[in-house]
Length: 493
Image (cartoon, rainbow, N blue to C red):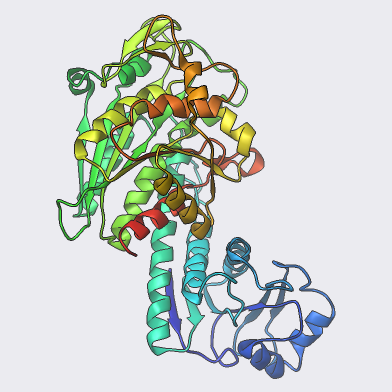
C-alpha cells in the first residue's frame, strides 16, 4: 500500500474514493466548503438531515456530480473536537470506508485530535489502514481477498508539512506491520506455532534485518544455566523448549545500555497436571501473545530504524500433562538460586519468565519490560480495555502509562505492596508460585518482582487485551503500539 501526503484539490483529484472528516455542526473546513460548493450543497444537506450526527457516522455518495472522485465518503468527527482516543476510532472508520476502493484521497480538514497534531493523526490513519489490511488465511483452503486499497493520498499544504506527514505515515505503516506480525503469530494454531517455530521465525528476522541478531538456547544449554524453573514447565511435553534471544542494535553506540523486552511464549497451555477446563481451551494458543508482541515490536523498530538498543528474550515452551510432567507440590530451583514450590502447574507463565528475567540481567539493561498473558484475574479487574501494569520504578511506570495514552493502547497501574507479596509464603521453599484466591494478578507480579531487584522493571499483564473472543476471535497485536511509543521516546523519537 502506497501512502503519501501531498497538496491536491479535493474537487479535481482523480481517485476512486474521496474521504472527508467533517464536523456534525455546519462550520465546514476549507476542503468541506470546496466540496460542498462543487456538489451544489450536498454536505450542507447531509448535515441538516442529521445523517452525520454522532462521531463515526458515515455517509457515502457514488459518482457525485461536480467531483472527479468516483465516490465521496463523509465521516463525522462529532459535534466537538475529538480527543486522541476518539480519533483512533475515527481512523478505523476511515479505514473501513476506504477499504473497498483501490485508490483514495483523504482530507482531515482540521478535524484533528484536540491534544495531538496533524502528524500524529496521519500516523493513526496509516496504522488503521495497515491493520485493516490484515487477513488470516494461512490454514484455510481458500485464500481471502486482499484489501483493495493500494494507494492513498493525504491532503497537506506541501513542502515541509508534506515531509512531516510522510514521516508520520511511514511510522504508522511500520507500527501496523509490527501489530500484524504479532497478530499472525497469535492466530496460528499451536500445532504450527510451536517453540521450534518461534525459534525459526526469530532466525528469519535476523536474516531479513541486518541490525537484528538471534541466538537460540536449547534445553541442554538451559540446564547448564540452571534454569530449573523454566524447564519444569516443559517437562511434560514432547516438544523441546527454546530460549530465544534477539538483539536489535540501533543506537549510535553499540555499547549503549539496551531496553530489555521479555515475552511469555507458552505456545499452548493445557494447564499441565492442573488441567484447565475443556471449554475455551482452544484459546490457549494465545498464551504466547506476550512473545508475539516482542516479535512485533522488533519488526516495527527495525522498520523505523529506531536509534535504540533492544534485547528481546522469549522463553518458548508448551505446558502439557504426561507421566514426566511437574506435579503440584514439586519444588524447583530457578536460575537465580531461589526455590519455588509449584502449587499449581497452570501458573506456569511466571515460572518461565522468572528465569528469563534473571537471564537478561547479564545485559545490564536500562529497563526491563515483560509482557505476558499471565492471569485471568487481570481480565476480571480490567476487562479487555487496559493492560495491567506493575513496576518497581515510578518513572518507568509513568513513562509506560504515558506511552499507552499517546498510542491509544492504554494500561492501568496496580500495586505490588509487601502485604500481597507475603501471600507467596511457602513452608517448603523460598516461595510458592501462587498466592491464594485474592489479588491473583498482583501476587503473580509480586512473584516476578522477586527476580528483578537488580534493575528497573515493569510487567504488563495482557491477558485481557492480547486477543478478542467470540465472533471476532483473533489476536489484537497489543501492546505493540504502547511498546513502540515507549521505545521511540527512549530513542528521542
